[in-house]
Image (cartoon, rainbow, N blue to C red; front, side, top):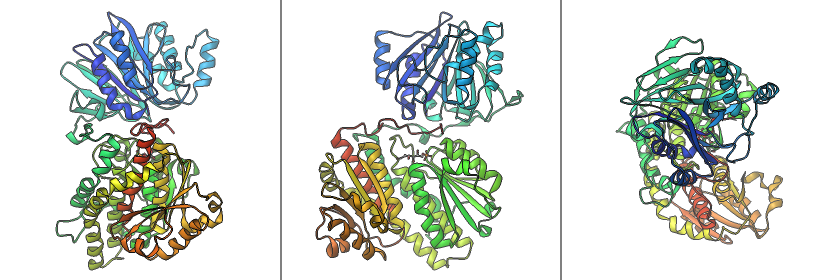
Length: 608
Ligand code: F6R
């Protein structure tokens, strides 16, 4: 969360920083700010709310300077106000932007106040500016002042500093939160990710844990945790890492929903052989035949992808699977055995809790596989094997194509492990692979039904509560449907295993509560329909999501029906996810909420 940019440029940098911040706005949009060194002095502009406000502010109050740092904030300590906005300064000597949390800031702040420091904000970040300022005042060079400060800070951070009287100097540091350096011609850049820097340069290196980089227009010196001068590999960014446009869609979310058949086809083409007979994920060193247990860890929607995949791993490979929320897993210190495969799923590859959980598993599990969308992310780089989901950039905060492509990769991995463990014959494997290869066209069929879903959603905009029910492999999808709806429409929604209804949640049902029942005609259909009748008997308004056969036999009494193509096999969630996404999307649009940047949320959660 929070996006950081820094530029030592040849020309005025404010417009470039603003442009890069736009590409980082998915990380937070509570406030934004820029500081520059102009005629040797620090100057800054800050605005509350979205970047548009900062951009308007800069029109009436231009900010000059050829070196500068910028920030877009997702508030942690202190409300979104001007004084809490970054960059933070102490006196006129140093400005800093920060992504992360300084856990011992209260202690540091008390000590600084006791020595006479005046704080203007409630943020944890301001202590950093005061500490560096104090060391500068004692006569230290900026590099030494930063190096003295860093060991005093506990927590996670990515930092970028700018100093008065130093128009050719930026200092960046990373501990826990990602940071990339971009190399230009007579210019240098810093960014929270490659997306921010892609219009400026295609040459990127990533700072590693504990690194501190001293950056000038013609040189970069990187010091590791032990203060040794080190080199970090310079990578060329691929075009697919660059942020794309809405391509005529009203929102990124809608565009990304409609991209799913194409994104899914990429996974199928990449990981299933052209003859449809085998899986081409390269994992010979992973000893998949020797695994006896699987632990899967993730957050939010990615966690629900894991919860879905549990059914696949257990069904196909007959391996017991535990699924955990990363923020719980990391502090529980679960006993992992040396025959356990740990799988981490993260679209961004930067989620702080998932990364911390991965680091624990690296020590205790046999092997660590990550399933990521961003191949250069921290989670990918720290795994024994990273399998890209190939969804392309996902800009909307609510994950859509990321989720379905995570599911597809997990399904293929489950089949791969099952095959390695001799749990599947070749004909069985080929049947499952054929099922997967049909899915993009089935997704297209569902997208064709979006006008119907839009119509249903118009009836939902006034409701205050909604439930989602599913059984078996559709249970996690019920949770995902509820998560998506509350995330972008702010309607309270909960998902349940339909069999659990009568153990409590049924008390919520009345004629004001729409209940989405996800019920393909599979082996659990009859059971789910019994639960649906329990809802109808209590006047619940059922939105029945099923195929033609299901609708013919059981739709009587439903409030609405969303008809799906026939999919009886276990991969149905990869298609049934789409009506859940569209319901949430069109409901949010009808309510007029900010679909791509819903309140209080950010795309990349780099704080715990
Ligand atoms: C919901 C959503 C979040 C993310 C979660 C994990 O639509 O997008 O719940 O799934 O924050 O993010 P990643 O996958 O980047 O680790």
